[in-house]
Amino acid sequence: MPKKVKHRKVFKGRSHGVVRRGNELNFGSFGLKSMGTKWITSRQIEASRRAIVRYLRKGGKLWIRIFPSKPVTHKGSEVPMGGGKGSVDHYVFPITPGRILFEIEGISEEQAKSAFRKASDKLPIKTKFIIR
Image 1: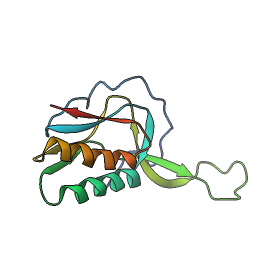
Image 2 (image 1 turned 60 degrees about the vertical axis):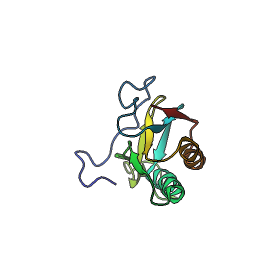
Image 3 (image 1 turned 30 degrees about the vertical axis):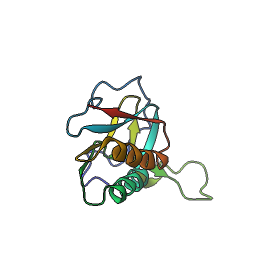
């Protein structure tokens, strides 16, 4: 969840093709790249982060290249039509194809591949393992 935002509620928006930035490895040797378009929630990011960290066992370093800063609103159950937009329920990051999600440094290729496989099981999109 972001500490401070300019606008409390935002429009849904539309996805526009492949990503132009955030599509190259900058920190680690191995990365997890998205192959689809979806909203990834903060809970899904945290679940995949925990899966990777549990696999690392204090060896190597992890970078998370995405941050959920887009608020998603939700109206209560059995609320009649009208009455404006609902309150903020959770935060997401809109993923487009080609975006780097996670990077790892300091472990072997097989370990990184299996750690990212565990993390991709927690995400709602298809992903690809990449090497620098």
